[in-house]
Image 1: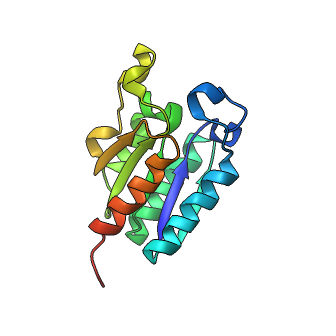
Image 2: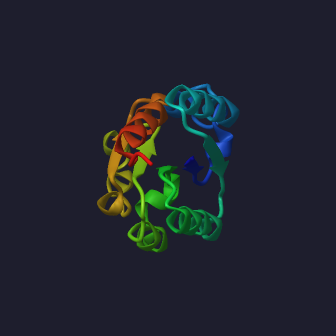
Image 3: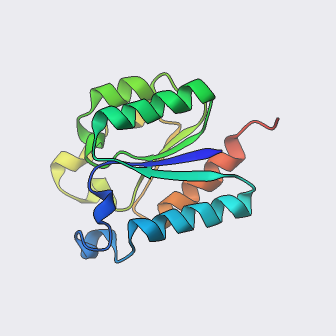
Length: 144
């Protein structure tokens, strides 16, 4: 199993700044992730929340279950030290993803407080960022 966790405003994909985030919806993203998971022989569960506490709870669930995570922290990227501290406890690979390239956007988006505790970061490839992250996790997962 791989969790794909999405932070604030990502339920607005398709209508929120399509010039930045594209025309695909959260449902399109979920379908793409699940299809990619099937091709990799993995069950993928996609979730989205605007609530920081709920996101941290999901990270704790992943830690306790040793579940790999693809995480788009969205706005939490830039300020959530609570999320960063939760991720620092991870027990399986966690890849930070972004649809756009934060380094090519407004200055406040240039800092990720979670990048330093993630396995890696993939950004700027649209929804393909998630596909790349799922492949990276599938390659990093220990075989049982």
